[in-house]
Image (cartoon, rainbow, N blue to C red; front, top):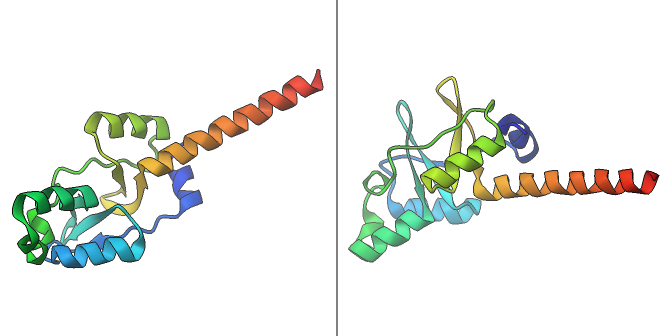
Length: 142
């Protein structure tokens, strides 16, 4: 299965935040959209990515004053990305190697979606269920 197939079923909407937005605004966006990470959209495209985990770790280091600071201070700037043509299997390897749970999908320098580890697991489970049904039908035929 390709990333494009996955995006067709889940949609390609992506929650984004600006680098100058406060971390409080970021948290409000994460809660509003029920997502675990947001792509940081800069003037020239993807400037970074920031997750709930990033916020929690930085809050532990800097305390509540961090909430007023800009997202740019805690975002990950080296962002692992994929394309719609990549396979879900290749993406799962990338996620494992880079230890990331959210990967923006980019085509022609443009953000066209995002895939989470949950999306990858759901896709794999659907593939396994389809295989199980095919095997059961084959066995039932004799």
